[in-house]
Length: 151
Image 1 (cartoon, rainbow, N blue to C red):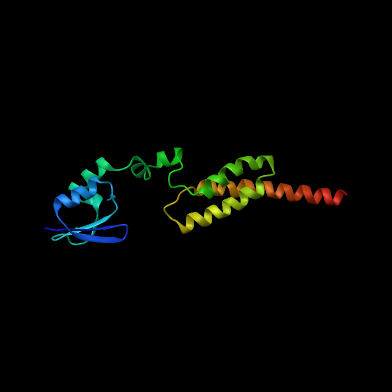
Image 2: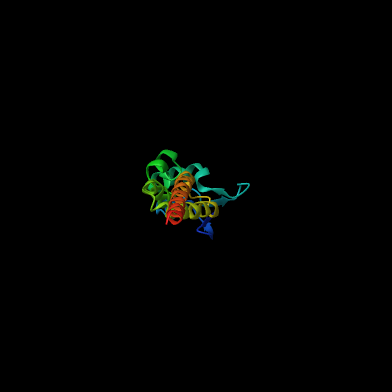
């Protein structure tokens, strides 16, 4: 029976069993790529087909397998919005007041980025940047208003 696969939006096939296994071993197929062959009710991710998931699991890149692990995501910036990372660090430095508006802006951009790209993470850092950046920005505004009224 011939296999059909969809890799990066491209439908390939018919492919023989050895061809599909070679494709999987080459690293060009991912666990999430769709496959189908006669007798299957519908297209399924390759990771749900036992013989393919075994091959793909052995040849998967470490980053791809780490992306779904919440502990690894907490340690490494895998799949995290760059804006969220910037917002988090600027939020920390906003305690020095000057970076506060930048933390606020980066936090807002991060939330927008994460909502547009649901595969990205970092909402906690984005909110942290917004909160501390907002507080620091309010402090800057109040100091400026106070300085203007005193002059």
